[in-house]
Every structure is written in C-alpha cells, then in structure tokens.
Length: 191
Image (cartoon, rainbow, N blue to C red; front, side, top):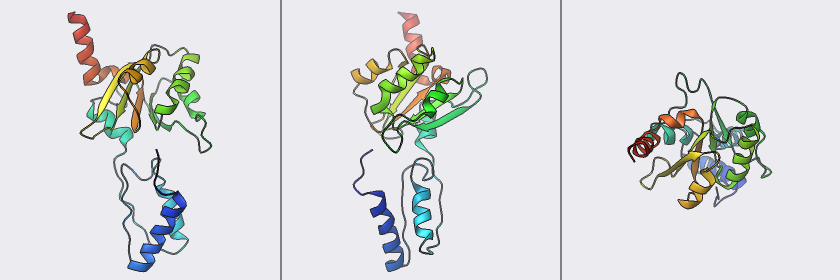
C-alpha cells in the first residue's frame, strides 16, 4: 500500500522518540513480522541499543479468511498453506507464486490486487483455471466486502465489485468451505 513516511523515516522516528522520551510504542496492524517490516524496525533500534519488545498480532492472512469461515487447512481439501506477498521489492511478481501454483496447498496472497492479472495467468499456466478464489477487501473492518469465483473469472468479479487494496486473496479448494461460497452454491441449486 501507500505509506505517508518512508521506512527510513519511520526507523529514525522510533529511535528519536525512544531516546528523547525514554520509550516509544510502534503500533502496527496485523502481525508486525508478517510483511509488516517489524524486523527491519527492530534491527534498526538495536543498532542504537534500544531495548525492544514485540507483541504479536493476528495477521490479516489469517483473520480475514477466518471471519469468512474459510479455513486455511481442512482434511480432504488442503494439508498446508502458503502466505506470500504478490510483489517483490523491485515491483515484479514474486516468483513464489509460480511455485505455489504448482502445489495443492491453500495460497494466501497479501498486497495482490494490482497483480491479480499476473497471478491468474500464473495459475492458468499450471492448469488451475477452475481453482476457487476469494478476495476479501478491508478484512475484519465494517466495510469488508468479498468476491468469490475461480481463477478463470475472478478478475471479472473483482472489477465488477470494485475490489481494491487492501485485500487478502485466498486461492484453493478451502474457499468452497466458506459461508459465502456455500450460500451461493445453495442459491444456484435452488434456482
């Protein structure tokens, strides 16, 4: 996402306030050690001998799907899961997505809405066009919304429903276990 301060500025502010005021609290959403740059900030503070404590949070990679009743693993569906960021430091698609697309694991992609086309193409290359997908925007918030589909139609669904960042993308058979998928499937059967 877009940040109002550079990481270097944040690091310097942490050190400044710790030295000037005797302590500082750096509050982050989710888990600071899962794509939260928490370790970078810890490492920087350590260079100045500033003692640090970490209070782990619950990552959006876990919270958003859980609130939609989408498990990461479930017997007969998925025995493992990957959590990946969509974008490398240089701005390209992370190569781990191609590796993940070859597995039977549940794939949770953070910061992936701008790379959705590339992500879907990667899964198509591995014959996964029918794989279920859920995209959860603003997960855990009042304005949360979700779209479901599969690799072949999720780009259309996301565009139709104006899905944008921040969002968590879940790819895998476990999406079929979520409450919205089950409700929509029941509706289709009834019609």
